[in-house]
Figure 1: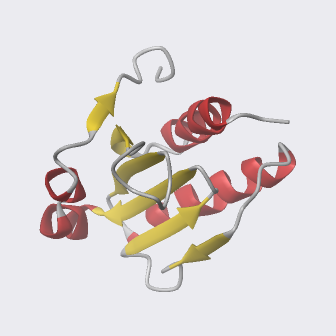
Figure 2: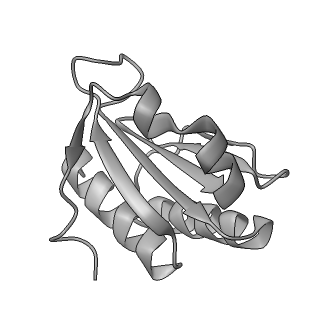
Length: 118
């Protein structure tokens, strides 16, 4: 059984390989009942946002991770990918600046991804 830290690391690596920009992971434990980790990143086009979401979903399923749902894919402006303990928010660059989830969840600690990102 894959644990939440492995889900986080694997999906962040996949997003990075698809050139997701400014990947940030927030520790939501004790802050939100929705998930233990939120990951936020963006792409520069609708197609790139969709490609990042597709690849994360595909690789997660290959690794037998639970993919509960994916929302917002058709518009490609803000795709939410629910992996249970990890929720991925993949934004179009302009929408990320508008919604600024990092500020909304400002009390959450940022998790270092230095060991995961290339």
